[in-house]
Structures are given as C-alpha cells and as structure tokens.
Amino acid sequence: MDEIRIAGGTPLRGTVSIQGSKNAALPMMAAALLCRGVSVLRSCPGIADVFCMEKILQELGAFTWWDGDDLYMDCTLADKTEIPGRYTEKMRSSVILLGAMLGRNGRGRLGYPGGCVIGKRPVDLHLETLRRLGAEVFEEKCLIRASAKKLRAARIVFPRRSVGATEQGILAAVLAEGETCLENCAEEPEISWLCRYLRGMGAEITGEGSGRIRIRGVERLSGGDMKVPPDRIVAGTYICAGAATRGRIRLKNPPLEELTAFLEVYRKIGGQYKVKSGTLIADSTGVSVPADEVRTEVYPGFPTDLQSPLLAVLATIPGESRIRETIFEDRFKTVPELNRMGARITVKDGEALIRGGYPLTGCTVRARELRGGAALVVAALAAEGITTVEGYSFIERGYEQIGRDLRDLGGRVWR
Ligand code: UD1
Image (cartoon, rainbow, N blue to C red; front, side, top):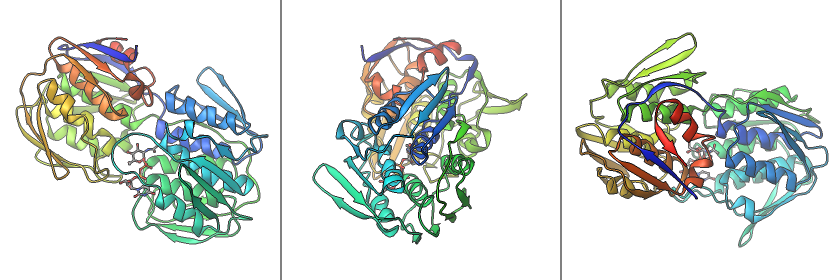
C-alpha cells in the first residue's frame, strides 16, 4: 500500500542518524557520467530519486552496483545519449544530465523534466546556460535535444539564482575548452559538495559557495570517490517532528552549519539546542512562541524545502504565525490537507497565515509532493489518534526510512 500510518500524541525522544543528502547525491551521480571509469558515492541514501538516477545511468550504458551503502558507478561504456521520458518526468533534477552528456559526447536528448508539483519550475536557465557554452538546444513537444561539437568556456551571469542551473553550468563547463566564469550562482551547500567531488575527479574549480564560480576546462576526469554529506532537509524535518510533539531528540552527524537559518527560527519559537560530542540535541519542550514572519530564501536563508514541515509545527503553537514563500509560487499545496486534520491555515499572495493551537486530529490525508508529505507526517505525530498519509511514494523520494527513523525516536509509525 502506498501509505504510512501514524498514531500521534507522543513526544519524540531518542537518537537518530541523518541519512546522506538527496540534493547532494543526485548531481554527484550526474558528475560520474563525465568520467570513463568507476566513481563511488559512499553512504549514498537508498531513496527513490537515487534509484531513478541509477536507472538512468544504466540506461545510458553504465554498470552500477551497491556494496552496503556505497554506490559504485562504472561509466566506462555509458555513451548512449538519450534518456526516455518515463525517467525524466519522475524527477526534475534529471535535466542536469544534459550538461554531463554534452560534456562527454557532445550531444544529449531527454524527455521533458518533471518532479514535484510546486509551481511552474521552468528550465529556461538550464538551456540558456548550455547555449552560452556553445550548445545548440532545441525544445520539442516532449523532448529537449542539445548538441555541440565542443563546448566552449563563457562568462555567464545568471539572471536569477538557481541551484539546478548553477549545477548544469558546472557540469557542462568542467570538460569545456577554456575558463568559464559563472556569476550570480546559487550558493547552496549541495553545489559546494558537487564541486568538491568534481575536484577530486581532477576538475579545476574555484569559488563555490560564493556567487562567482570559475572553472578551467580539463581534457579528462578520473573516477570520483566521496562520502555523501548528511541531508540538511531531513535533519530539519526531524527537528520539526520533535518540535511538533514537544519532544527532545538527538541527531547524530548533523550538518550544523547548513542548518543555521533553520535553527534561528527554531530558537525563536522556543526550541533550545546544543551540540554535544558531535551530536545535536534539540529540546522542544519549550516550543510555544508563534513566528511573526518567516521568509523562505535562497541559501543561506531559510530553505523552501523546510517550509511545509515548519507549517505543521506552527499549527501546534497557539497564536498567529506567518510564512512567506519566495522561491516556488505554488508550494502551499499541503495546506488543505493540514486543515483537514484541524489546522487553521489560510494562504494569500504567497503568504500563509497560521492560526495555531487548535487540536490536530488523525484522519486520512494525501501527500502530493515530497516535502509536503513529510509535513503531513510531522502533523500526524502531533495529532490525536491515527493518521493515514497516502501517497507515501512521494515521501520515499527523499526519505530513506522515515518510519524506522521516527520509530527510533519513539514515534508510533508503521507502513
Ligand atoms: C533545488 C532542490 C530543491 C529545492 C530548490 C530550491 C535539488 C534536486 N532540488 O531545486 O529541493 O527546493 O533547489 O532550494 O537539488 N527557475 C527558473 N528557470 C530555471 C530554473 C529555475 O525560473 O531554468 C526558478 C524556479 O522555478 C524557482 C527558482 O528558480 O522558482 C529556484 O529554483 P532552483 O534553485 O533551480 O531549484 P531546483 O534546482 O529545481
């Protein structure tokens, strides 16, 4: 059954390890395509999006295998250049493979990218970036086609910050001729992890984590080998689960620095945290203060991916809270489902007004996208009675074992 059940009302207590990051692993898997050899991703999360990316690499001719949590990708023979729509419609980030295919073989075709239904999500910046690097790009009805005899370095100023388009530019430029300068880049940590991975493969990149990234093209890359960093969004989700139930939880291997903006909000609503022997202890027993205005922002601001889980927390705090979404125009799809559980949230002009403190009650709700699904699980943990969250497959895209992890924290969760 594509659902997860939660008996709520118990404060979470216990320790949980944070899985590897989805948004770091996926572009690193795309990077593996740039080398005719074997690349490894250690502690790679076993989530649906990673399995989908693995299938795509296989479709292109790669051999892949797992040794425990380590994913091996032998891309020696991965010279096919077409990715069928059945994969790309499932996962938007597959579009970054276009830059990698161009870098490797000078051409690529893929079905139009899909992914979470959280707004328009165009790919214009991706395609324009590839054009600026010398590719010819054609958009057909359900297909994107690109080719280039040889990609050439360029100076590209992104008109808006985009994580995916920055990654696309990096992946396409590492094997291009000359020195590329990308400006107004997104500064998300996952971009820095991609650059580190590529540098380990022999790429020459500087400036990641800032708005200006320089890439000097090299002739070839060797295999990459790195541990996938812990997932900041999963860590934030579990802290939200602790907060919604007024629990006290400990996170092993927390990506502390990457959580700064989130932890600032957590502290404002009454959460307390400390770092002890490399673990983060998040004590939510004092969570009680509404948030006057949280705004989602590009990194290092408050992450849009944690907006929905935070909504669920704020629904449990008496008083009025507000969250403004500035990254994706349609990312409040979970609100009607939260309201079915008893929350009182209204959305107007990109802002959610949460009248918190009304009791949440278990019922059947439906996840329609990944982080919204996680938010329903958070709300269910705080609700009286049993909640069935349908659409579990959305949650599985990014959370390896949300049921097991929450059970480790004392949650009553089963599939
Ligand atoms: C990535 C993350 C996603 C996160 C988002 C913002 C991955 C796999 N996904 O998504 O979890 O929510 O960053 O932190 O890493 N845009 C355009 N044209 C484009 C590309 C983007 O207009 O060609 C717009 C988008 O519609 C959106 C904004 O730019 O409004 C930011 O999107 P972007 O940073 O590209 O997000 P993703 O890379 O899709």
